[in-house]
Length: 133
Image (cartoon, rainbow, N blue to C red; front, side, top):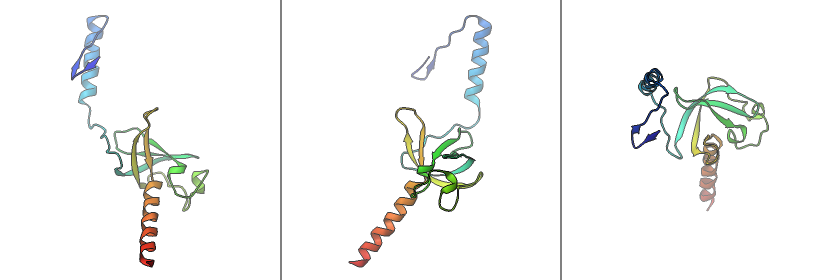
């Protein structure tokens, strides 16, 4: 049980207790931790796998891959990653995405490349409208 920085550990016998302590210490001492991102942060991610309806991206070398749904990859509607304008991103490609926190029900990380492209398009459209006045 974890509470206020203190650990309580229970085991059925002394051998299991020492084994559990060693395991916990090794997990706590392991390399780099995964950073927690700020809402709205723009991240550069690397594509690790391309599927039909999403791509898996790596946000940090120590983190699990995160799926980015095809609807969040482009402002144009596509049912399949191969139907995206300019084609699907390839394995090893880097792309910029916006971090939208975690899903409140599942806890899954939410990322969007579309949010960056739509924002740029709206900025250009706004500027062109103001130039006509």
